Length: 239
Image (cartoon, rainbow, N blue to C red; front, side, top):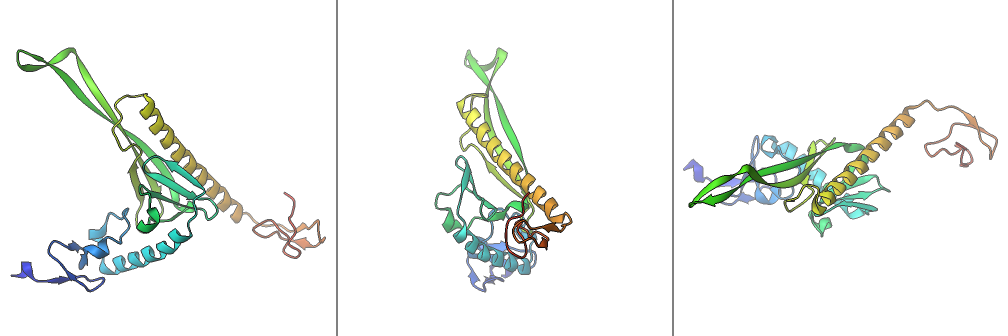
């Protein structure tokens, strides 16, 4: 009888329907609450009720970031990376109406690098001899390729984002589709590497000791602010 006892969601309190339970480490989650989780979160079953509630608060705050997100650069094919260079944020999605789906908005400083893996599938081609399939001599093969991208991120909720560059399998190495997928992967990788490099340089500059200098505008001895301006008159200090 215990198998058929009604369960309730430990997050929202609603009754969980048949086959609608999503197990947590110390409780139960309904499928409606589960839909609100980040698609990049992979350890739901090992998460506690308290951790899921905290995650859903993060997802709620993320909706405000999505509403304010304004792409200045878009990279990719079916799955795209949108960059808001003004806010130093980015997101990954394959959806056209992505604002409704609340994709995770990630800061530039959270990008830890990326890895491209080209998966090659090799299948032997046979010919028929007296009703039997036999190998060619030498053997003939068909190949197909899938470009898989993994982006490593520094987030409390997930450590990587995985997606395919090409939706359809590519059948010719070096062909047009193969070169297009390679170009998209290279652009994604180069853009993220540039972001990572710029963030490291900014962090290093912020940690450098500041020295007093003479303002050419008001002649005051000043320590330039974060924008390189005089703390007294606001004038730009020459580089």
